[in-house]
Amino acid sequence: MVTLEVVDDALSSIEEIRSYGFSPDQVLFMDETGLWSNVKNRQTYNFKNWFTATAFPHHFIFSFFLRITPHLSPSRVHVYSSLVLSSCDMILLILRGNPVVKEMGDRFRDTVALTFRGDGVDIPPYVIVHTYRGASYISGRRCGPDEQPVKGLNIGRMKDYICHVNSYVKKQSLLCMDRLSSHTSGKVVRYLDSFKLPNGERKFIPIFFAPKTAFLISPLDMGAIAAFKAYFHQLDRHTIDLKIRAVQTAWNKVSNESLFNICVNCGVVGDESMEALRERFEKEVVNAVPPEIEAHRDFYDSWVSSHIDVVGAHRSRGVTFDKPEQLSSTFMDGVYWNNYGVGTGQG
Image 1 (spheres, rainbow, N blue to C red):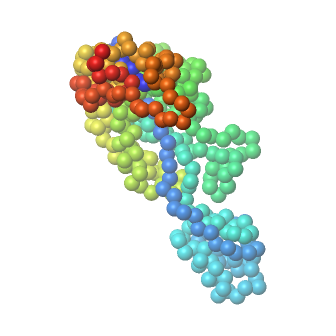
Image 2 (cartoon, rainbow, N blue to C red; image 1 turned 120 degrees about the vertical axis):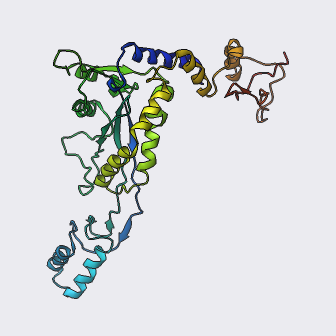
Image 3 (cartoon, rainbow, N blue to C red; image 1 turned 60 degrees about the horizontal axis):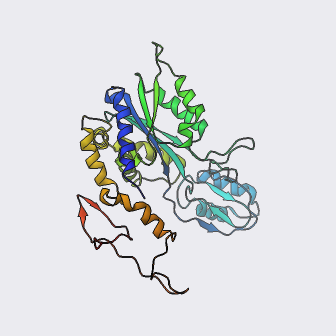
């Protein structure tokens, strides 16, 4: 259950950001999200005694089959090579005896780190292509025998991301992030501190949002990622190259004005008072405990966890319990209270 203490933590994070007195172009927000492909079903063709190969344009594949199948007539080789290249002029095949599997797309998840400034100006995305030990060489995802698989924004990739962002930052800036372990790592924090401005000041000052507050004050969680995904899912993402191109295209389609408005709505940019932000945030906290029954929450938690015996509430095994009485269906200044177990004012 989310309590109103989350609102207090969110406002404390906003106060911390505002305490530096930086202009919006000196406040950076970053977060990462997963990237999935729009993959078609794989098609399998059964042929015997074929060898591992890579498909090339038609005249190359024709000569390849003619070389490995000298017992076949050129007309039949032409038919086989045409079947292979029926979908497009350049495809990748895995030919491993029987059957032959034609790769129709990329089935793996990747990660992208999105970043923009408080004034809405976006920074080019940083894409992390995941690698695996068991992936095929043709997929482009197989890591070397002495390499560790890449499966997200680990500490090493986080350092690479910082180098990526560094080339677009010219002023001392706040880097606002959630509390992912790769963000808060001591190695990453020390690496951030190593970047200096010509005058000797730190270039990046990390700001970590309080736990469970990102849904209130992180501009990326509050709409920027959703806007990006809305465009991203409309684009072709069958291969790694197409996916990276789709990331860049989709991020460019999210306007700077939209990003700035999201920052203002989160309260991290602008001059909205803390009292107004508190009132607005409390309405957005779903299932927050209303103040008038806060004193009864401990009793309620004990009761629903069966730590308190209630007279008349015991039945034999196998008999279904009735749901406890629910509060009347009412709205309390925009917040709907829908937890069970509290009386309706009968005493």
